[in-house]
Image 1 (tube, protein in one colour):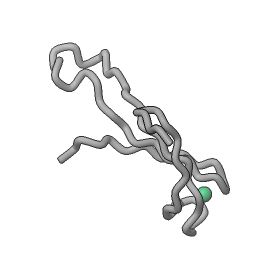
Image 2 (cartoon, rainbow, N blue to C red):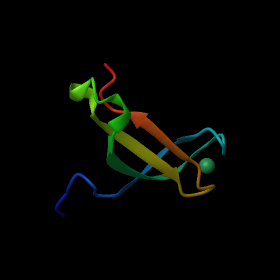
Image 3 (cartoon, rainbow, N blue to C red):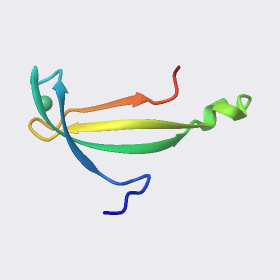
Image 4 (cartoon, helix red, strand yellow):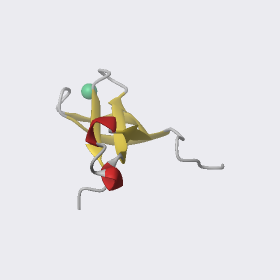
Length: 66
Ligand SMILES: [Zn+2]
């Protein structure tokens, strides 16, 4: 299967809402933070978004916060 930046993958992760290991639909979104125009290098941030397939809770995490 081909993979792309916006491909959707199912994987098992811990859900805070369910307090269980549940199946999550994981995708990557590029968010444009247009309010921070003075920091051009941070203007587009990749976020990893995981949606619990049991309760629908969504969590997003900035990927490059090292
Ligand atoms: Zn859940």
